[in-house]
Image (cartoon, rainbow, N blue to C red):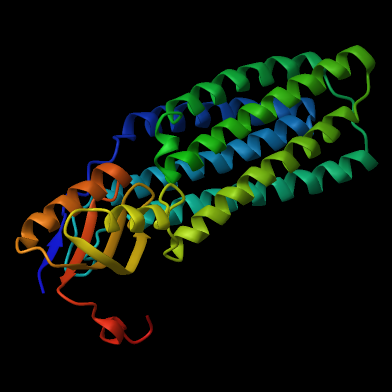
Length: 299
């Protein structure tokens, strides 16, 4: 039976410069913020510095995964190493969630032991943090729509910008009212919001790691489109799975009475790539439905 393999996996966006800038900026800011947190005793600043530190680690993981994804397939890894980007997205989400637990734990203790805080110093450092984190997030803003790994990096940076913004609010409140409890209260509130976003990222990465259909692809729409093409009488045994956070693979059986099956295969493979972004398709053409013989052990 004829097969067609569309081998063009596309070229991932070069995120190297974005990762270099983001890692450099955040590393420098972690050092400044941690020093300010220790000198002032601000839990919000220390929490944000710790969160930024996990972000640097997360960025390095995501960067490494993006590099691995560009490696060509080998005998040992016939699909290449694109799955590393899915693992990186999952690790990023876990890093955020671990940081959230630590912040909430420390904030709960701070309620019991209030500390006098220099609101102005905290305010200035947090404003710098907003600039650094917002700028870092913008580096991944476009790529986040098509790459879960880039989305993880974007969420890390956006979350830090939100934390820094909350710290600004807390510092302003402390300056105006002297209420030092605003520091841990804001830390807890923002951490809970970040946890919701991180949980969503983890859930999506876990789904992809289990060969789940990527969210941007509708299997029903793919099957319907295939069935409407000239020369195709039936579509069955359709499977769609991720090769990485940016590339998707498909295998399917189609029943066709066309004489020129090569032409049918070409139209289907090109259409899948342009209509659904599925660059690697394996299409088996049959004259008659294969019935139970299509089934494989464990299918």
